[in-house]
Length: 300
Image (cartoon, rainbow, N blue to C red; front, side, top):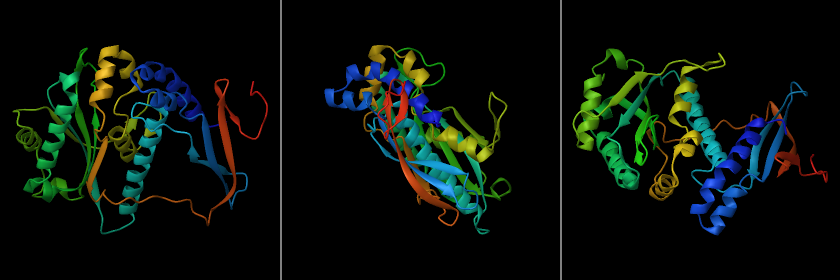
């Protein structure tokens, strides 16, 4: 299988499942451990260039668990694709000219055992903030995700915070709708009920990856906003007690919310004028690699 992203994440998922399964029911543990054992892809061929093909995941055996590496990857990619498709759709309409901001909203660290209560309070505060007049005038749409741990969070503690991608009019920075940093901080602090909370607001910007690759601003912002609620490296740092609390406390917390212009979903379907479906390919996980389903070989 040439697509290494699924191979790598399946391997990471297996390693991660060893810690997760001892806190799960037998049925859930089985589904997490065997997530991604089978994958099914639709294979399309370009009508203008027969040598050009693309493979799109169309099905498989998945557990849909929040902390499963493979399922988290799939969910993030799906959400990222939907938001980028929406942005591309807006850019094709001369009447829809938007600029995009990246907003980070934090609250004081809390004990891991109090995470659900704090996350619920944050969600209520955010909803309250979106009803304030200056927000309603300035913000045309938003995508909000929650992250549970920060880069330097102490053991036994959680650092829940929101990443928010905001769409504003292209004239926002020179209009009466402009919201200053102090106003953003006051908005969030008043909504949450704690003075001088830390917020960060900035225009989206190009990101340079460690390998030197240049990531366009919109892709970088969407990727940062819609990433895992917990990174694999963060999960590895947690003690068994903290991991157990996190799994219990995060149950039922929605990872992503959206409003305004982002409520509608604009998917980019495969253009059948350019691509034709030629076959389906299935793969099974065997001997630490994906092997085609139509072979009886041991995939050595």
